[in-house]
Length: 441
Image 1: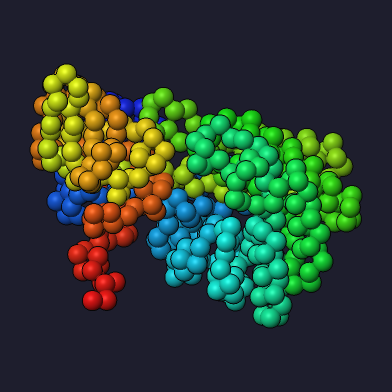
Image 2: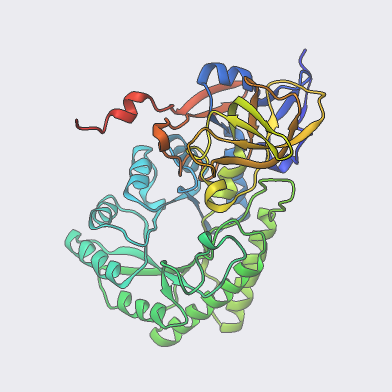
């Protein structure tokens, strides 16, 4: 009988909950040997633990009982995932016509859809109104007028949120800060644009303002920014009541909760996070004499990120004496752009066998024609690592497949779901035919 044990050479929070090592040192995910996954599906491959994904959906739903949890599809979305979100009772946040198309293909309940985006096209707005998207988050004065015209022509009253820029600077990478004044999203609270947007929406019969929305950034580990945003948003709710006599029933505080990519990361517990937000909103509402609105949040990375591992095969090991050792794998920045884009930090393990060799810090790099094509910086891997070995990079479930590219005409990897000792494709690997299909000559 095979003996299994939790992955012990890395912090458990970094790995999918089903990750174990057999007595031969082989990594198993969802009860499936990674060597079998590599044989059947090839490498690189994104391997997703379905039970872990569904479990995190349920945890967020339980933490925000009485509110709305919109899974942020931009983190990772496919037809199967949209169905899981629906089956577990959560709602879905989409931000393009393409993401909306996935939701519709999955049969997602349209009244539980939230449509984001700072530059929604006329066609996207028309389709959202036509299919009955539950809420559209208006992001500019141009869009506000455009959506009102679309809804009026369709003879419907579209429910909307106004996206507010609350002037809160999250402690995260500058590229994923979205709450400060100088950025492309939303209506500024400080300048008065947010208040003016509310006036305009309330004056348009084709739009029904049901709440406010804000989002301060992504991959955040400190609740302080969320609490400050809640304070300012409740203040705006009170100002709207005082000016218009309107009490808005909903408040969406966005997403952004960080996850553990390495043992150094300490993400917030979802139940503690939810309780902290709830208490802050209740306190602010009590101080202003407002009823507590229905809270909404938009986790993406916090649900999908920890559930997935990218499986690679080692191709070359190149030692530069006195400098470093480069271990090249069969993927790279085409399947994980985050390291090059954000200087993101990951970890990795030898996944296909055990090793008693002393570990050495190496640079895990990709196959692309870029010196910045790094998968993991300075990661300790066994000194006997060799071509043909499999390595696994955890915390690969958010933005990896979503931001994947065909750079150097490399086909994007498949997404493979594992559960109960079985594996199945969610998204197939691209082929050369796929890469050439759009060429017209």
